[in-house]
Image (cartoon, rainbow, N blue to C red; front, side, top):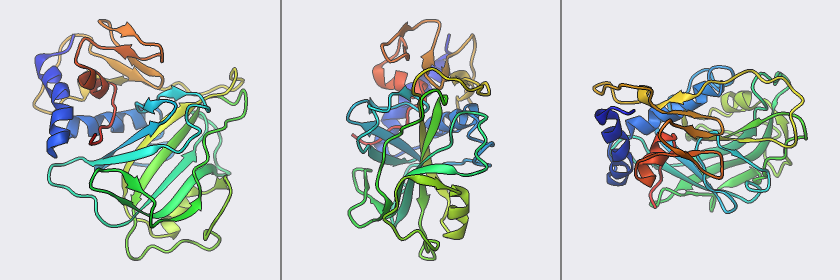
Length: 275
């Protein structure tokens, strides 16, 4: 069971997000998801987001981090919303947004990762929605399309601060098709700023014929603020949903908690955006 302090912390996440105050529990959740899925440190050496990124697809709705979906569900362009992690923060200026496929856990990606989306100069509106109205699109959004049997691919959507000193490397003037690249080298060579926020999804086609490295679940009881305490078994969230001893399973593989809907989503590690 959850401790009262943890339940209170989780239940408050949507409220404090709407009030523009601290979202520390949600930030810890997305950090834990990236570590559990071995995105950190196997790909990103570190991940310290200052904002929360939410993905909403017409065919799937708003997704939880690492949610397993079909390629058809995430084929259309998503609506991306970004909420500052700390009260009083604003998201001004220009940003770069990208989606890259870093393959299944344990795959050899020394030859690069697959770029499915890259736009420079995006902005974030007053409603927290990412806009490409004034952006330079290098690769238009192209939905995930993993090869059959190639395992569960991790698709990362990342938002970077784009400083005045940003300059796209040679060959990245667009438009470019979906292709492999050294994304981390692009970040370095273009002088992109910090990784502000990120999220990821899992997409698999057919029955896997690869041997993926095991991943770890996210235990929500470890995500409480430092002043909180926890007792009992807690709740864990993995790449395909949420599990709890007191919940019921939903059709998408996630579990429903005996909490309010928004609180249950917070436990699952969902990043919130202003509605």
